[in-house]
Image (cartoon, rainbow, N blue to C red; front, side, top):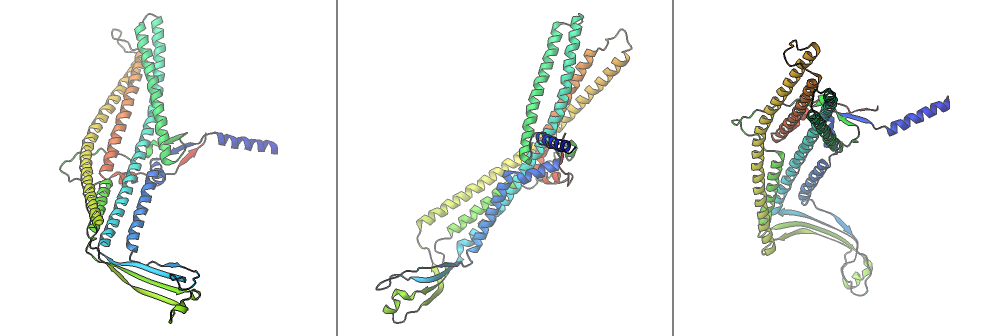
Length: 442
C-alpha cells in the first residue's frame, strides 16, 4: 500500500505539472496587475525618481562638500610642490543669479515627470480595460459562432435531404454550403483574434496566456455620455500638463542662461593640509608650519563669454519650441475630445439599433419555433419547415454577433472619452475594491 500511495502521489504531481492551470481574473485584478508590471509604468517611475534626484542636486550645490586626500612623497633639495600627509578641501556655492532659475526648472521637470507617470498609468489602464473587454467579447463570439456553425451544418444536411427528395435545387445546397464555409472562416478568424487578445492581456498582467479567461460580470457599468456643448471644458489631460511643465522648465533654464554675464558668482572654499617634515621644508623656511588651513570666498564676475551668450539664445529657442509644441498638443487634444464625444453618442445609437434588431430576430425565431411545434393552423398558408428554423437561427446568431461588435466599439469610445475627460481612474475604482485571483485546475 505504501508503494501504491507513493505511485499515486507521483502521478498526481506529474499530472499537475503537465496540466495547464486555468486562470480567471476579474477586471480590477487585471488593471492592478497591469499597472504593477507594465514596463512603461516602471520607466515613468524611474523618470520621476531621476527628476527628483536632479532637483535635489540643484539644491545641494549650497551645501559644502568635503574631499580628503594625501600627497605623500620624498623630495631632495628645495621642496617641490606641497607634499602633505593628508589634506581636506571643502567648496560650495553661496550665491548665483542663475541658480534660482535652475531650481525652478528642476521643480518644473519633476512636475512634468509626475504628469507623464499619471498619463502612462492611464494609458496602461485603458489598454488593460479594452483588452479585458475584447477578450470577453471574443469568448462570447466564439460561443455564438460555434452555435451558428452547428446550425449551418444541420442546414446543409436538411437541404441535401430535400434535394434528394426533389424539394430543393442544387443552387440551394451550394448557397447553404457557402454560408457554412463563411461561418467556419469567420470562426477561424475569431479564434486567431481571441488568441491575440489573450496573449496581449497575459503580457499586460504578467500571467501565462494559456488558459487565461476573464470574469464578464466584473466590469463596472459604463454610462453613455451626453453631448453638452454649453458645459465648460474639463481640464487638460496629464499629457498636456506634462508638456506645459516641460516648456516651463526649459523657459526657466533659458532665464538662467540669460543671467550669466555681468552677475557675481560667489563660492565658499576651505582647505586644510598637514605637510610632511621629511621634505626639507625646515631647511629652507625659518618658520615651518606643519598644520596649514585656509578659508574664504571666491567672487567671479563673467564679463565676456560669447559661447555662453550663444547658449542662452539656444536655450530661449528651445523653450519657445517646447511652448508651441505644448500649444499644438493642447489644440489636438481638445479637437480629439470633441470628436470622441460625438462619436460615442453615434456608436451608442448604433448599438441600440443592433440590439433591437437582434431582439426582433429572436422574437421572430420564437414565433417560428411555436409554429413548427404546433403547426401553422392554416392549410392554405406557407408551412414552416426545419429549413426555415435553421435559417432563422443562423440569422439570429449573426445579428447577435453584430450586437457584440457594436457594443465593443461603443465601449472603446466610452473608455477613450473617460480618459480624455479625466474620469477613467474614478470609473476603474468604482469596480469591486478587492477581487482575488481564482486559479482552478481541471
